Length: 394
Image (tube, rainbow, N blue to C red):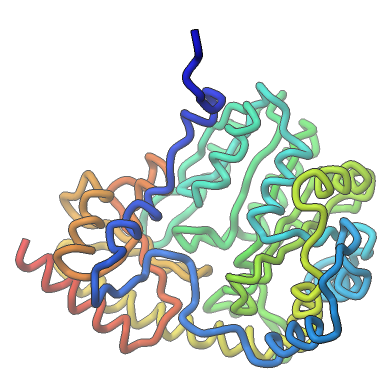
């Protein structure tokens, strides 16, 4: 008797992306305004694209080192060291996208049966990846109020002895929550005592707003565990070129890991992707070395967009939204909605408006909707008009 072909049970039990489900509902519809993905509406700057073109014209189409080409690793090390504590290039691993970095660090640290804690609501990949590896995921929800906030004591109580790792994404997707330095100090001390790994998703670290602690002429950046961690601490940071340098489609990221992990990390990179494309890495070098002006422009543009959208949404009846401190999203509550997937599907068809359902970010996100504000004020205003009109008709 032939058995029906099937994936592993743990893979079958994974939740499919509800953001993608809403986007698929909009395929083929004309006039939809898409704010569902975490993606800017501007193309990658010309000087970055030109670097990749030049590398291609020079024949850079061959395999590279598992950890990335030395000039890019050195450039990233210099960049990270300027933002945080000094980091040697030997602790940098270039990856084929930030999501690949997150998968690699999970494969490096998490065993089947391990207990892993995640601060939620959270981009679903960070919750589902440990499950793919057979781990148990326990969540600690942020609290909804004037801003999204973390109950640190609740997190510490959940980080019991024997917990393998904690996933912390700050600035957070979808809420825009930003962890404080004081919170990091308490969490790091607790994890040191109990041997718990801190797996930090720092992809949005440059997208912070109202940052009054930054001296003139210095780079604005969210608090990072890399500011506090010693070189042998159980801290791994994942990052990406996607958000800060408008490079979502390039699929280029990096990891900062303790030196004793690097040999084993190299094995995992070989067995996953082998290496990132050389011509893409050449674009990464110029992004790191010349991209500060792009980041400054992006942060100023997004802050104006955040302020505009925050004011418009809070003026609508039935909507409550905290003001995000970072990232590129507003995560707002719609009164009376208990099925945001159905709501967002209706918005696509009836209002030609594409938003992401809060349930895509875990049960804690149900009742909320995510709006990516990485777009022009004109498009945001039109989106608000459509949402307002839909809610009034409802």
